[in-house]
Image (cartoon, rainbow, N blue to C red; front, side, top):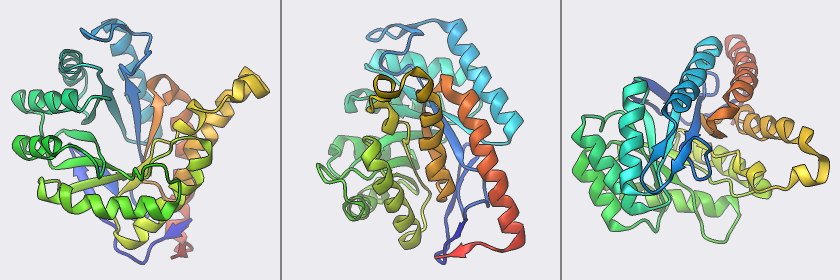
Amino acid sequence: MLKFKKAQSIFDVGGVRFGGQPGENPPVLIGSIFYHGHKIVTDENTGEFKKDEAERLINVQEEISDKTGIPCMLDVVGSTDNALRRFIRFVSEQTDAPFLVDSPSAEARIAGIHYAKEIGLEKKIIYNSLIPESKPEEFEAIKETGLDSAILLAYSGSSLRSADRVKAVKELLPKAEEAGVTKPIIDTFVLDLLSLSTACKAMIELKKEVGLPCGCGAHNAIATWRIKERLGQQSVLPCKIAVNVTPISLGADFILYGPIEECIHVFPSVMAINTSYKFLNRMKDQLEI
């Protein structure tokens, strides 16, 4: 229910808009596909996968996005150069939506964005992600390929304090800008359940100070929490929904909501929050900060 005194940037990435005042644009929901352990991937090294199931999942997310009016993207994850190239090619043939290029390996991410450049997708992808300690080669690859958007991860080492997340982003911004990133999108870094609150606080502080689109990978709060063992399987879904809508209610511009399979639960929940925000905007009854 917030309105920021600071002007809020809005970035268009391949037709998807990030940012603005809460409720001005619907938050972007990003589902992960081909991630480590994803059942549709049969060989993570070569990038072999079940194409029919991958196509079905992409279609399900796009259908629920259309029904709810909440824009969607994919976080395309690959463990190796070859796997990420295959996944990028497949996704580009299945959807017109922009997507994130992601890997635990910097070398694979670099290879992925070079391949995206080769097939003319450099304006439809977001590099996921940069941190203050990212290798110079990553910034150079972004500059070489002409990418203009990247996720800036507010990683601050072992510290969980929101102030350190803000400091990390301010340190990273000039490096990203020098590499040609004109559309920086900030992920305030959720590591576990305890860090969800500090990530949300950092998000509010960054929107107040720099006015850039902010969000987080809220699903990490549950992915690392042994809730099933404590309260049973039935407790997992409501907790997943809760952690994903919490940043939305505080003005997040995007959420990496986790496995794409969760889209049928997350999109309707976010639609409810977004609908309420739009009403407050019409009433001009927000809390200005």
